[in-house]
Image (spheres, rainbow, N blue to C red):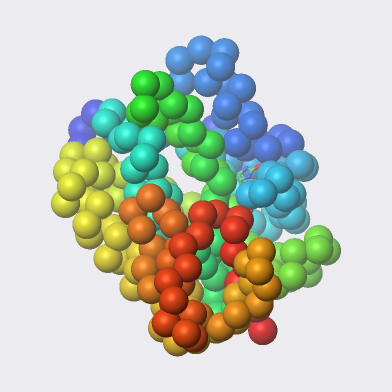
Length: 254
Ligand code: BTN
């Protein structure tokens, strides 16, 4: 892809850091950091995941990186578009290696029933708009043994049976994700429509009845839609629509 001329991506590669998201957030607090400034590290010692979880990554084996964005007109109520854009771009990159990747709502990256990657987006808001977004991405690339309590990890090398060039993977992923972001920045209406369609197409369990659990207990349902707000709407066996915010429903995995 050819970036518009003014865009350049600085990549700052750290030998070691607790969390690339935390490092970049601190850097942004201490002064102006250019958009797309990206922090990578081979050794993330206290990686953070969603819901306060930790993110396991063996040194020198995976991708752990964070990029800062300053969207110009993205309303807080539309922030899920950014999440969808990043998740779909990651799938597009991974599809160049092999197939059957999907997005488990809201933005876990899956291969079949296993998790290969995750996204941690930390937004700052100003007057109803996103003023700064730190997008952290972790992808299991060449790691073969996992030690954390995460139930179903898998890596790209375990899927493809080959050792993956992490630098190339990072370049492709950054490229795809910044391309999607620039599309959003330039043409939000068109981009949000396109990105939503691709997101729905890449959804894990896009079709069919599967087990879920909410505060009332276990039930079978199919995905009805994901709303632009990010809410998941499930249709249960009785035909009732059930609408959930993040953390309100759990996918029961095989
Ligand atoms: C998840 O729980 O699925 C999200 C995981 C996000 C991990 C990445 S690794 C790079 C960045 N720095 C962090 O501390 N977390 C994110």
